[in-house]
Image (cartoon, rainbow, N blue to C red):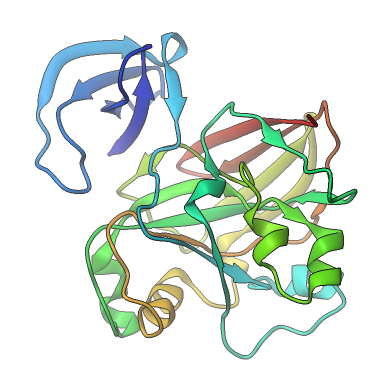
Length: 256
């Protein structure tokens, strides 16, 4: 099931997206917290504005260097345990929203990723139980001010600027994520082409590991890491992240 959050000009609502990604059947309530029912209203996807499918009320948890080829291109080894960092929920934007390049940075990079959306409160999970708390999956671009990441020595500012965490286009709730293609395009050029099968730590392991540090809440998002091929993006360019079985998340980059 594909669940989108969207607006037709009024308050945001949720809907179920058809398999072709062309139509949305509007539903009542927030699927993370309430039972949903069809309202009878339908819309064409092209006629609505898709929003970030979830706005985490608590946190976004990033995972660094979870692909060996990406760790190698960064000149580092793969960490023995998942390398976690936190991103503020104010960084989250949706499909088509502009990513604003901050004046503090001259080296902003894209990072296409699979994102995991948590569906219920959980703590101290074992890997074999971890997938039971997953609500679904979406595409993410873990935008990073690479020069600030190097100079700061930690990643809060480099990855936490407003608009630096695009999510979308919707949440897919029924998906085998063991071996999905993850492709990133910059102005239609393929710059990342990986597979979730190459993740050092899989989704179940990441959810378990995060839950042993933090209580996970409905709507929390875990970014699972990026494959090799990260690189700079400039104002006026457009970046697309496509995850097999989900869809395409596209965002323009601008400088104010």
